[in-house]
Picture 1 (cartoon, rainbow, N blue to C red):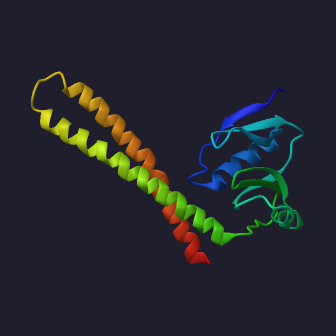
Picture 2: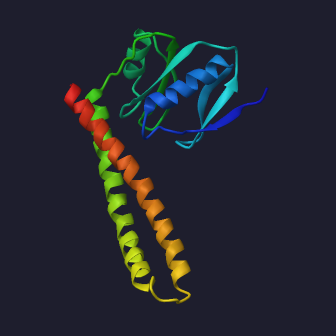
Picture 3: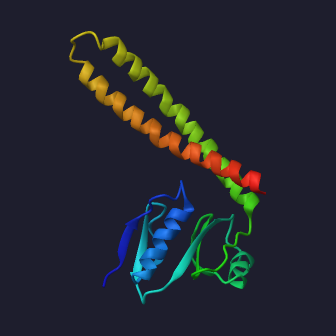
Length: 178
């Protein structure tokens, strides 16, 4: 059996959704090894079927003490990429996070970044929407290209606003729970 590559589906929206998928793959004999393309696709390698849970944590740096704290709590380090760290443990192992404040800061930082992208993508959406509305009553050939460009700008806006809102509410939820 060869390595399998799967798309990272919900990392920005739900760590738990991705970790659940990774656990399902492990139960079928495909274990997470690393990224094929960082933050876009996972590389799964064939191994014995395992009943494991995965955990994703955000932590600046990868100091050995950080990894050791997970190991002491029953979690094995799988791999790290920049500030994102993947761990696995036997099914039912209690989740463990070393740095809730750091996670809140990361979510706020990502929310701010996607907020800026949202504002930037809002400008062409409004401009092309206005132009489409203006030329809508005329029978000029410009209407179809404006419609297509407006649609693309709306899709861009949607793909920027979704992570913005998600990161914002995740940071708010964690802040309220602390």
